[in-house]
Image 1 (cartoon, rainbow, N blue to C red):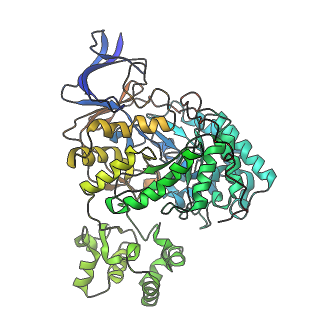
Image 2: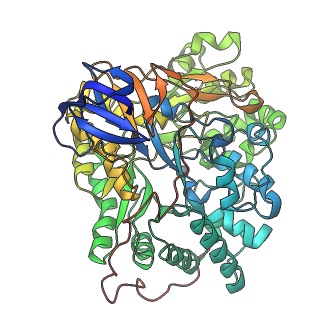
Image 3: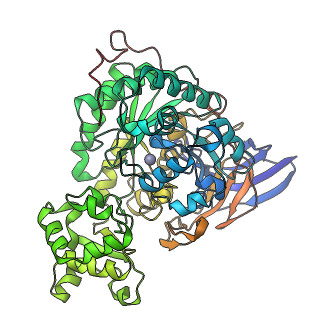
Length: 586
Ligand SMILES: [Zn+2]
């Protein structure tokens, strides 16, 4: 007897092959049959007119903490995500030191670097695990979607070095401790090593995060440890994700060749006008292949719709002169931003255009009643009306909201030429769609909805690809990169992670701030339309936009739930990436 039969849907199976009408029978969490299914079944879903696809695989999220209080990892589950990989960019929350001794540092770091409200992290129950294995035990049986977790470089460096982790290079003895912690984490099932030399990654004290103090040799030694464990990967945020540099290219190729594992790096956006620069960045993938490695870029198929706020100051603190002002406590910061002298100085120091083009910002959300009329308006227009400069206009609005105002850069929608450029890049194999950062930057970005957005825009609106190709890119391509066993396809024997969607109706919904995090903190939130049902490991998790109380998710274990990420031995003479460079501190 089958547990569930989905009857009469068009099956878009994730391989990219054309759809076919078929029933999908499910038993014991797996797909038992695809075709005509006449076996008796406990439950039947009549899916005529709908499309069934594999569940979407989001390989770059930061749900490590959210998994403690929100087992379905909302809102990603509503967007059809059934499997996600967290612990990226070096920021896993395990290991955590004896009895969770590093919890305070890690929480403050996450609050700063990943935009998770500190009060929510602190209210999420005791962070008292020591090891990755103990953290996994905490999650087991609780999850509603599948979660794989990387072992984060900053976590193990903090464990090995304490405060010195954000002061200097490691000693050989400290590196040995890091390697041991990494081995323990990978033995427990961590999916690989994650790290960052990303320029915006600072900790709760405003210092660069621990991994940014690592010498090249430290990173390479840790990547090498990954090579001891089957089914692992390396994820890395390079120091200059916007430009190709020889050092950066060599480093990423070397990480791959010493680990003999794929390296993925974040983050790349491609539009028609940036296609040439993307090609430059993708050269790292070509170079890696020539050396017997594999390096792929994560490409986010959504325009940067980052919501800025002077309350968090994230990214804005990179602007010349703004760092010290935004580092002030709230009262002092508000006073400084009211001060005409400070405003004059900030204006004088800013470079023209780009992020500091205040006139080109659009007001998104406000708190004060007096600010309501400005929602959705260009700051330039507001300033013209008031007879002030755009910066003055924006700071006046933000001041009335105790700096809670959020605003975005005004941008035209992506065109069909932009989508064609993206399509050409994902077809070429050196980039994989991903990089949502879901679970992070909670008041700042909303890329969690990228699977639905991709289908809505690339398939429905601009018609640059068929649904089959979009689904392939959202499922089996990322699943293959991480070696996820039996996921990312609809096939007999595969895990029954499925999305039932109404192709004509799939669309991103509106965004709003919801105050549903622990301790009442807010986050940007949105649910799509057209996702009729989401099935995880054979159990229905989402039914027409509502969660069931099923908890079918699994903690994915490397070497068991992943396999086949091993690359052949590197091409001789290139295995070490040439002579080691001098110790580098960023
Ligand atoms: Zn990240």
